Image (cartoon, rainbow, N blue to C red; front, side):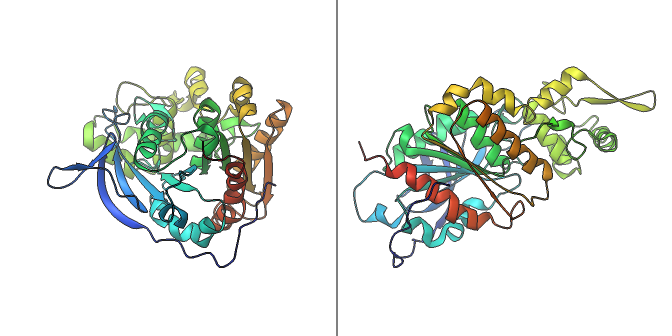
Length: 371
């Protein structure tokens, strides 16, 4: 496991976040009097108005909650700093505001870096950091909007070697897949308990392979008949099948309400699967081996690639998925670090962030001087 000394124990405490309510349009923020100004160079949480999420078919909000956390060293020099982008998990709305407490002293006791939290939660729980006509282009929002915005408004080192991408659960999936597609933007990747399926794919009963689960979702879909616009989104958000709705709208979008295709249908009193639609669902987080093979060269070009998960994860398919990813990366000859702890999906989240994730990126960033 990559580790780097944390520095002196007496490092001063981090400046606490100033939580603001800036509505960011493009590369500027607009105040109540109409004046256009950039956000201040302080720790902040703001709403980023994304053009990539605008005009999505389902009508989910185009605003992304973004948090920027800077080290104390940012205020004591004119240096430029590397940036770690962190993607929270499904329904993790508050991670950006919580990040000062999560990282605590650790950010100031390691290689100085800016931490930017990009929240992927939406009305259905999450957009899965993927591009979709139904819920918006989350991947493009991060790569083409938020990264340039941060580079324009903060003293960053504008180099892939000085940009890292990490995430947990849904965000771990996002970090892994966006990282392999955009190695020219993010030079290092760390996935914590990523939502990826193992050898069983999404057909595992605890995912989308159970007949009883299909009946439940089909009943929920019937409740959406005839609904459009805000009424449809509200009904989908409050449904007991919102997780399946979020997955379907992300990976199998459709131009007609409810704006996604479901692989099961009721036929003659039973449930029948449409294999063509199933292939779209499987291609979400059920075919990570194919994605690794497709992007092997990009993955191998990364400064560092890390994978971390808990063997007691209550979602055992995620632990199986991590083992599967590790095996596939090894088979493809992609250098990486794989660490396993005894925790569950979330009970060691803060500890893994400070004791494993930060040292991982500190070692990567510490190898490069500011250009």
